[in-house]
Amino acid sequence: MPEKTILFVAQAQAVTALFQSLKEAGVTGAIADSLSGALAFLKKTKPILIFSQAKIGIYSADSLLAKAREAGDFPPTVVFTDRGSAAEAQRYLELGAKDYWLEPLSWEKIQAVMPREGEPGPAGPPGEAAPAARRVQAGVTGHSDAPGGRFAIIGDHPAIRRVLALARQVAKSRATVLISGESGTGKEMFARFLHAHSDRAQGPFVAINCAALPEHLLESELFGHEKGAFTGAIARKMGKFELAQGGTILLDEISEMDLGLQAKLLRVLQEGEFDRVGGTETVRADVRVLATTNRRLEEYVEEAKFRQDLYYRLNVIPLKLPPLRERGQDIPGLAAYFAEKYCRAYGLDKIRFTAEAMDWLTAYDWPGNVRELQNLMERAVLLAGGGAIKKAHFLLDADNWPDLESGGGGEEETLAPETPIPTDAAAVAASGAPGVPAGEASDAEGGLVPPGGFSALAGEPTGDIETLDVMERRMIMKSLDKTEGNRTQAAQLLGISVRTLRNKLNEYRKLGMDIP
Image 1 (cartoon, rainbow, N blue to C red):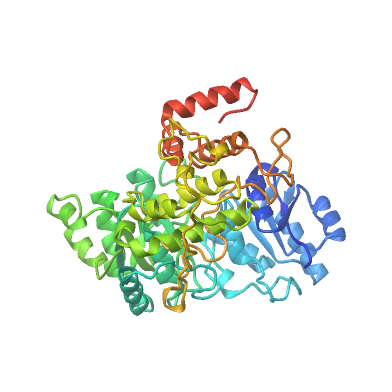
Image 2 (image 1 turned 180 degrees about the vertical axis):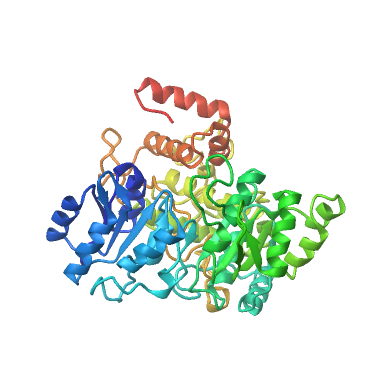
């Protein structure tokens, strides 16, 4: 199979964070920071895609697109920038860009525009952008190939089947859906399922976390703003509702939205229109609205923390996701799925569970739901190192780690029966991990170990199994990357105390390692 390559015409710091994900997917990333550098690379290699920053010093993506028109046979080119406008997006699309995105780039968005297996590669001039590409892709994830094409919800429990059946029934409607459930049950993934099975599947899917921004910033993010609307508003910015035109918007953690902003959202739902911050022009919104919450919104309404009229507008179709502890029969299949996924990611052979380990998994209460199970399976796969997963590999008492090198504390290696992963047609969905992706996981962020492991000294791939110390260090550093250096969150992710984590980091500093 020919090697897939993506060329980034960009400053290195804007794209290098993507290279680990590209490598894991078998894609080579290359960087050029000028037109001459890009053209020199294209003489030797034909990438499947080009991503070009709009401006780098004196370089402009206009010059690259001009070369594309001259060549006729040129890879599809996506232009991206850290600040853009609808006018600039339209201009680049007319010049022949496949799409126009706002930074940051993400592997999930790149996957959505990559040519699929069996599809023809780049050919012909890029002047005819696909209709679905004629949108500004700021914060927009690409559509799934088809329902069930890339992801599958794992589970056969009647409770999850009932939710899936209702979701299928209402997916093609424009009705608003309120998805509720505990943290880690997969609310956003069911939202993606609804989008992928709707008539808007070819349109954008835009998600925004209402708890992540203060009120004045959230309003601008949702509805956009005009130039000069407030200090720092140096240009017009389109909001998420405009970016989601013709598609779906997900309002995550809707319960955390300020009451004043709730009134403006209600207008969008009732009238289908809104005004940008500081603007006088009314914008029509052709968008389907989905919302998620891990709160009991009925109680918020009673306590005057949430508008009653907005609650009724959102709760046209209620989807309540069951916690994992109520889906006991799904736990073995989910555990087997995640174990298999991380074995592939870390270059290990498929491994089995001991009977004691599987008994513990099915008896545990899972307060963190599927997200907690996923993290636990990654830890267990790494510590098992290719052998059977034992209860000791879950590190239940992280301050008193068992002697894993001697076999895990004497646990008998009676293997549990192999568990089939229930992904029949009835449970297939276009989503990530409520459920989980049946192909590559959408939440697989950088830092995974390449097949064959890494050398303990140089960090280079080798064919040997890693030592426990190296695995431990890699897990700790990856948890810090995922939590952006937050020690408390990283310790929770690892299942150890903050004190233990700090002691380990102090050891690494003494070895001369850079600690985030």
